[in-house]
Image 1 (spheres, rainbow over the protein chains, first blue to last red):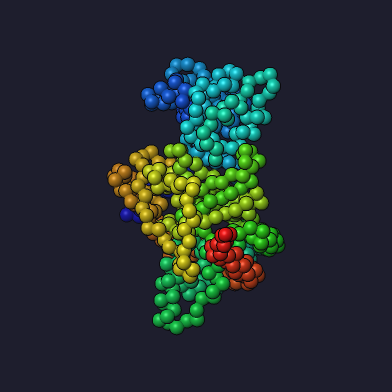
Image 2 (tube, chains in turn green, cyan; image 1 turned 60 degrees about the vertical axis):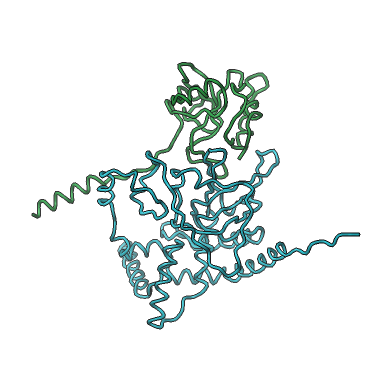
Length: 150
Length: 303
């Protein structure tokens, strides 16, 4: 009887002896994103239930933060996009969204769609202006198609 | 040696606390302590004990004035300085009484926005931290997209914190709203503030939310939440068995656990006697201002 009790206790210890934490929800390689603009390819991919996958994040850490440029695989094509809302825990006063949102752009920074139908964080305005250089890509066009800022 | 000494002093303090506790739970958690307090009051009426110190009720209205009970993070000087700074900030702007489940509108100055100010409305789903690090999280669903923003309570960029609806919910944290149907966390930005008649206790909203089907962000079934109505229909037999296995029914009898989670009554008395007068004065002056605002005499029309 004693041994059975001991074995019970040890098995209980095995099952709940380790500590688990919640996941970080980072945007990295092969993360699924949600396209939030009304571009044709994005709309069709979301309707088919095949949201785009990240295949590259263009920064040193290879982890996408707000305003970062990513390359996504969408409907068998390679497209570039900008992260406009993240699930991950954010800094104070920066909104945290329920999904990882992306807006598709082309190489010049011009968005493929004409309307963004979810709110956009205001901090993106500053971030994208900083990333825009006079002769490089112009990302601020994305801000003009946004409908709402939070 | 010193460790052993500290341990013995800890035990002595705990036994003192337990002996003198007398059914009064000192936690800052709103509902649970309230219920316990009520039962404690009944006991008191029967046994004829002296009434509770009224300034101890501040711990629900201003929970951030109490330090974190973990002795590792205690520092009496820092706590005192922080309290002074908090009072100074409260002299500058009105930080109203609110609870988890209240609906707030926060206006901050935002250098990134075009109008340089940003207003967000949402339900408070979490309130944590103590001292100047106190923070709260607002949640809303805007254009079918769930948005959450975390604010520091004593952030100097905050222009205004307005309570649109003062109420409590059944739970201490409302993280399950992330997995609930979106209508439970949708609030219009042009909501009008609802004014409670003076002297009424803060109402508890007994609404029970419906969860979306799985997958969920957390294992809600293990957390003994009262604010969820349809959790049983999403569970499998396996989940029910594991919930039973992980239950900790002994925790409510664990006096040491409660002691470690709360600030002892002597220390609370010190803290509240230090700040109560100023807080009370602030409350009175702000009430006057708000009365002026609500009963403004209409201007007589010319002609």
